[in-house]
Length: 309
Length: 328
Image (cartoon, rainbow over all chains, first blue to last red; front, side, top):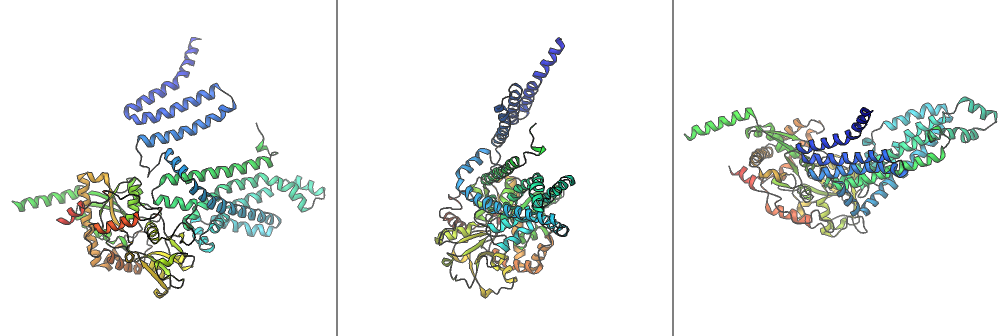
């Protein structure tokens, strides 16, 4: 009995003791490392305590937030203590300052790259791929002809296509949208085609016995079944669209846009501004993806993957 | 006795060379081409060896910012245009010009002759394609001195960020494009355009030229006598290379071609480039001309609402190394 208590006591105190020991050891060798470790282990301990002793929904939200803040804190502390040059890596606080001071520039870049370039290319590319998938599904001839072509387009490297498309469609957002179309077309096409094939023979036979027309069975059965696949494609394409629109600006652009800004601010060594643009891209990408996931949840509530456990 | 001593010293030097040469890494600001002939000549002809230096030359490229390489410890010394180096200095990377082999600027603005541009003031309302990545500063300064807005507002210049080729001009997506006397201008000519069809403005002719291709090192290193000594020998050998390259442009271009690992450069282009480069280094001995420096700084400070640098830089150049290098 007493041995059991002892064991419990050991496991309870082992973690803090080991942590404190590690911090002390690191501080002796390198005081700055000790501080960084203390921040990390302290936040870790806090999260363990929170998750062990509280079960509320708010806590479940708090734990990942603390984790994120810890990463930022470690970043900030490391940059400051080790006096890392802002040209190599600016501190999060510097990035936040650059972000706050340049919201007008960032907004103009966001409009140019995300709203004009990425979004229009996304809509055109995914829409075109969807219609092509319907045609491919209908005709075996097209399936054998168009899928390899789609594959071929997807295999073209963006560094090769972007300069050519800039030459064809000019320096504005149109050429960026064209790059995005080329990037999103194939993943969307392949996903939609396999989605349309996902119905079983029994289901199709059932529709047939109902004397359903092609259109009826497409809309009422096959498209419904294809939705999880289609949303897979749509979600993959959100990030592809952002990458395409930003990278395409490296090869020619007006003097506005996220890719343009990243490129010139690297040249000016204003890395805080580069990181601010990266932040915008990350937020926009997550938001875009999240929006798609949300719509998917609403439309495919019947699918096993959406069930709550 | 004196002779004996110098022999002993020479012996010591040579054995020292065999044991350990001082390592110097030079970051170029563009790919291997005749623009950097002096350094390749010094390497090939053994001028660096003679100074007991083991020099590594790192070629640059479209996405390499030499100041960043210097800050990251990837190189001891870099070549950079003064506008970009001074901007880096103001951004918190204290770089110092230790030598200036290029005495003239090769930067130009080349326009179609048929779009109604006869003088720089006519640029208003036209489209100009320019490289960015730190190379746009001289143009922005020039436009702001002329009172022509570049932010896309009415009556200003519409700026395009172009890649490092002349396609935007050839495709007539832009009326003007930035060119170097030794590179892009000839790409236009090679595309079959006659010089008569073009109007070209040289920055040198309009008093807005900024110094290009200087040798820069980190300020903190310059307090170390050993580093200063190393740089003195590096500058001396490099200027020897430039002198040889200017006298033997054809041979120098061939040396550059040998060092071009990408194999992308052609003999004709490099020979022609070397001829133009020789004009830019002609008459210079490596020391920075204070007047040219002052003009560069004035041009950059006059950048209007968005100047390249906001305050007169202090300690951004030193003549100590060139004086020591050229004094002996």
